[in-house]
Each structure stands twice: as C-alpha cells, then as structure tokens.
Length: 153
Image (cartoon, rainbow, N blue to C red; front, top):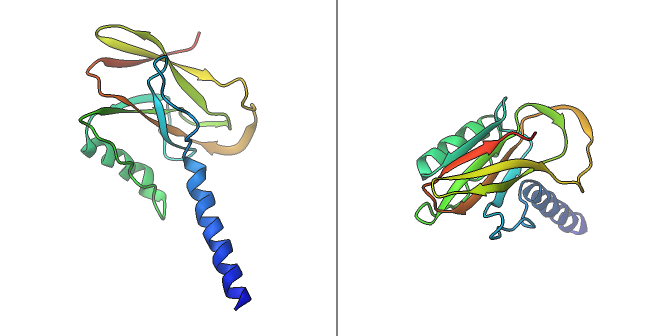
C-alpha cells in the first residue's frame, strides 16, 4: 500500500515538472512592452529565425499541428480570444545556445510596431551539444498594425 501511494506521488510530480518546463508566467505585459509570454519550448520552431503574427484560431492550430508532429503527447493549443488579442510567435532558428532571447518593443507608430530581440543579461550563455529549434509564443492586445522584427546591430 505504501509503495502504491509513493508511486502515485512520484508520478504526479513528474507530470507537473513537464508542464512547468514550457510555461513562463513570470514575464508580464506592460505599457513599455505589450507582449506577454504564453508558452516557450526548445523544440518545434523553424530552422531559420522567423517572426509569425497569428490573428486567427485556424492558423494557431496549424502552427501547433506542426510543433506537435513528433511529440506524444503534444503541447496543448493555448486558449486565445482573437477578438481581443493577437499572437506573435518568435522562432530563433537552429541553435545550440541554451539562452532564450526576449522580444522588446523598440518603436510604436500608427501603422507598425517594431520589436527587437534582446538577450537577458541574467541568463547564462551556455552551449549545448544538442541542436535546438526553440519557439516563444506571445500574446498582445488586438492590433491591426504591421508587426516587424529588426535585427540587432
């Protein structure tokens, strides 16, 4: 009986540890940076650096179908209200770096919003032997503005 209870506790802890791996709830949207990180993972992004703007549920499900193609179980599709929010997906491209860049708004005009990739100075700059293709899924208040990623100088 003790073994059964211990097994259930270990199994429950293992399930919860995988969930915490892909979500980052510490990052919150602000007036300075309207992006709010919803989900990130080291696998499922694109081979080259890319910024995707998703404005409907069908496109979001299509993105997750590609991400989950080799996963069992797959990542759940986040619930997004596309009447109020827009989704921005940033893919780093193929890398062996373990750090995760953050998108910051650098310009906000009437017709476009410009973001730049910024590396958090608190993150360690380790290199892994594994090839990673990370992605970061953000949401921001609904906008019809063009969303652009500028390269770091």
